[in-house]
Image (tube, rainbow, N blue to C red):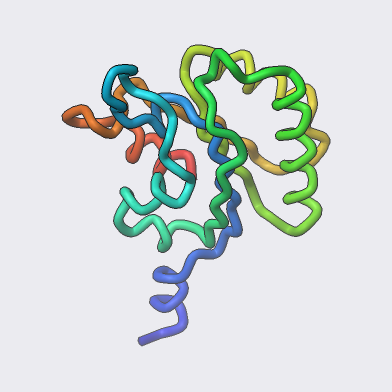
Length: 142
């Protein structure tokens, strides 16, 4: 196998996944409906071949519905993103609930000091529904 062909199968980017909860990480719980309970590792396990896209470090940062994400959560998240950038990560993907995803992305744009891509993604359909959109959204974000 040529060197060029070998590179195609090995991820060249170091990306951190920080999971915050939301519909993308929700599963149906009897009596309460869908609630965030899937870890970052569980989200990634649902995506065959994602390891060929990037060298991915997964961390469950919070496990909240997006309406419960506070400014202090976002300040801590921004500090974690800056720390990861300092450790040499090429980018960060944040999974988040869609109700306040836009507001959180805007806050992170103001708060993060590092000059690396930060992609915030979520899902409208939780993993227990037919055709969930989370795995495809997460793969595209990475």
